[in-house]
View (cartoon, rainbow, N blue to C red):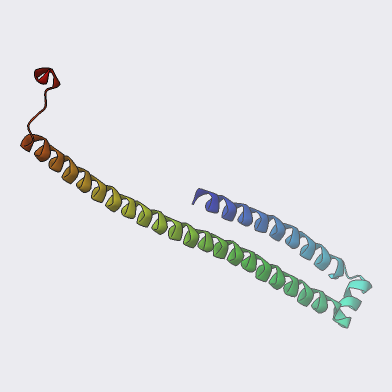
Length: 135
């Protein structure tokens, strides 16, 4: 869980950094085309629709970045879900193995107790042989 949280935080940090870089690029390109102090080039760009084209292009790039960030986040989350599913499956298998082992040990203990009781009864019913007496 901690590793997954760290990975998400790293992805968010990376996304914010890319977002900041993108904002700098967008404002720089927009600044180049804006009319400055009544200059003819800026008015000409506005009349030609160059500013609108750049703005649409910047919006499209921002949308692409947002889609990329969401797909990276989805991939990360689905990867974590797959890992969690695998761990849960392994945990269930381990629990089943432990349950089976516990049943096996209980059966073996029961059999051992039966054999021990049988041997005790057998030893009581049979006269003890004392080899020193017979000599």
